[in-house]
Image 1 (cartoon, helix red, strand yellow):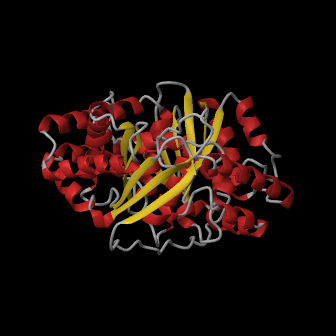
Image 2 (cartoon, rainbow, N blue to C red; image 1 turned 180 degrees about the vertical axis):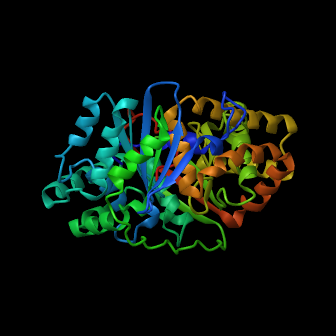
Image 3 (spheres, rainbow, N blue to C red; image 1 turned 135 degrees about the vertical axis):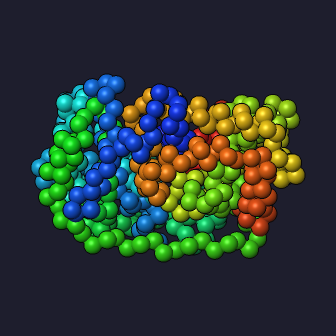
Length: 458
């Protein structure tokens, strides 16, 4: 990834809108202006006049989920190439223009999308719209630019995955968790696939997915929606609607037993992660799974931290994550790094004991109330940022519709302790479990201890 921003995404997808918090007297449905151009490009506009700035994000519905075996990583590679110039602007000129106009820009690729964004003074917003419209269809893809950037991506993979034992273990774990669905593929691509890409592969990927009807634009900030929508229509409306990209038809079948992955890498300590395939936000159990994650892992008062880190002292750190806003059903993940002298087997048993405890007895009313309050508090902080509000809109739109933002906290409020116990019993079962263990090989004693990432690298 050009610049990894998964941590930001994690913050946003882990919270939901509250129409009565943070001074947000209106729901998102009352604030957002939606418009769709004749060529299929959807525009989501949320006026916010607290400061004379605006955030513009362009989301393409393409990520690792859309890639074929042997061609993994093309979406991420294309993200790199989007900064290499168009017929109108030279290499890296996009970033220099945004900088000259006082703004900042960035991009990220995930399993489900590739997203480009910039923050500018509101009277400079037309600069970003013109640049994004230009590179949607006028990118220069040449061998001269392609080969050096392929080497950059190969080196990025070596640094972020091959030389990072925990990231490498998570990559192997994902591939074992999903046998059929493309969520098994790494966003950055398999190393041999990176070596095998051709320029023709990349051009085909660009022409298939970088079309107005496979994208949507999100803007939050100090602008007039009518004028801004007209500006977007003027710049992006010149492109005709293209053929719809091929749908992702692969569906993961229910597992028939526990799977295990052991990965040997030079490391100071073992690492353990346990994944379960669970439904996304479209399923009625999603709010209860969200609260199960919060009870287990939200802050230092959570169960995993209190029991494994503070009381039993078997873990340096421990956490859980739930991929609620993935486009397709994805994962609920437990992970932990042991204290020196604690084995991976003992740590795994300790993690599973916490799951068993929730399956045998629901969380107390006070414990669940505290977890709900933490979810709401996270949302309050997120509302102070135009960028996060735009990211929230984009994430929900991608997963099935931005209007679902307004539904989530009311659903959270209805979750009972018995609901949390029920989803723990239904989904966190041995037959639905894939366990990944990092087995450390000898390393330089002076090397730092690898720490648990904020999010499994994908």
